[in-house]
Image 1 (cartoon, one colour):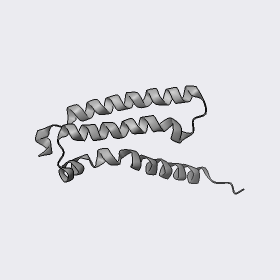
Image 2 (tube, helix red, strand yellow):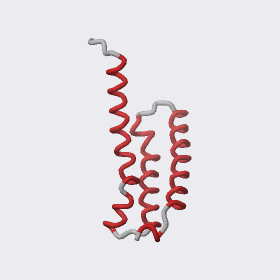
Image 3 (tube, rainbow, N blue to C red):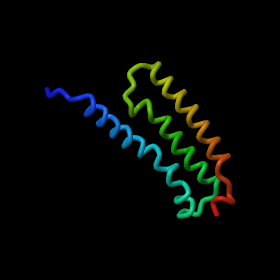
Length: 100
């Protein structure tokens, strides 16, 4: 087996993490464009983002292959907190006036 340098390992992990975040952040990053394209108001965009993150939170324990029940509980709790704060941020941060 070839020994990799710490810089190669760090670079590979960094690229992998960035690519993993692309899928997670696609909907929030495109929410303004999606609202214009699909003629959605702020409430509908909030639902779109919230449902997207809720699906992610529910699927996370299964897609990560978590073996221990405690890890699953921690992942669900963490994602529930993240979903709650994201939903509040979307609700408070976007109004119908800004959407056009």
